[in-house]
Image 1 (cartoon, rainbow, N blue to C red):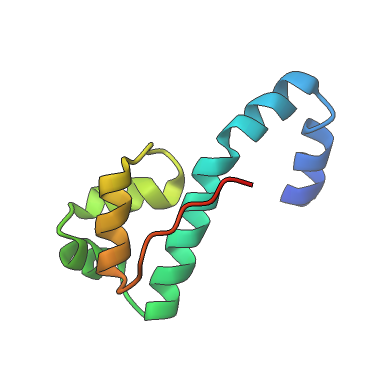
Image 2 (tube, helix red, strand yellow):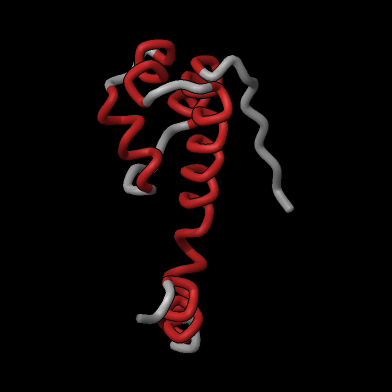
Length: 90
């Protein structure tokens, strides 16, 4: 059985796949950052949703990368995590 990384490496050889994957990377960075901060805080999705004053389904979609959030939503999530939202262009 191949690992996820092996499969991804193979798929990234396809230029169309690579372009689509790269286009989605910012959303996945957001998802990974939210998951890491929530776990670091010891919160469940439901607890974060309550503190961020958002539906739990929004937190779930954010963490799955299937949601394109507004800055306002990200600010609410950051506040719910007791953090400050910082954006960077690199």
